[in-house]
Image (spheres, rainbow, N blue to C red):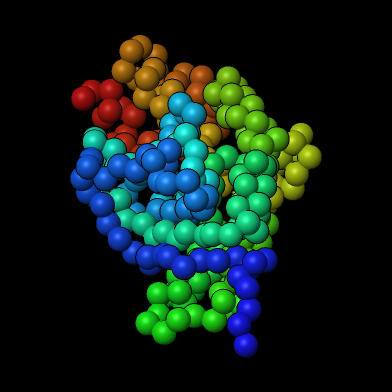
Length: 263
């Protein structure tokens, strides 16, 4: 008995792992033909670039771009990259796929973070469609929809993206003050755990780590450009004690604040 593919999520093409290391790797999605389809490309290692309507996004490890062909977008291997761009990719076809992934991308940025659960589903789906025997279309559609739902479940919405930009600006303006992540999360109307998870998705590290890096950069700048005592640098950069600054500074820069200044 033959069934129509109408109403199914069609995923006929995908590669579990490939590497690109040449600036010649460049795809312009305005020139991919008239038939619409969706590209999901997930970075395992290295970095790629996705541009859409003049805006440039870095596709770092743990992140994937969503392209809706045909459209004014492109993706490529950056000319200044230092290591290969290793990634997995899959294409989705059909009216349902176009509708679902367009709806998802309208709620988020075109480059999103994938949770480990979503990555596992993506790998499983690509493995299924890469087998020599032709995969059963209903099972493939079910696996594709499961991956879509898991992705949708974890994406930060645009409002959350704006919220975290405001948080980052707040950290940069008030790093010298006593900032508690739990209190910042509460002002955002979130638990600390939920706030930390979304912040990590957006920025690539947790809020406490991000704030610590800002304070370390500020301390290094004062050590380079002023003669202020280390104790005063500690106070001005928001560290609770000189010993905490000394410990974190050695971890980050490999030397103590005093040795850093002498160098």
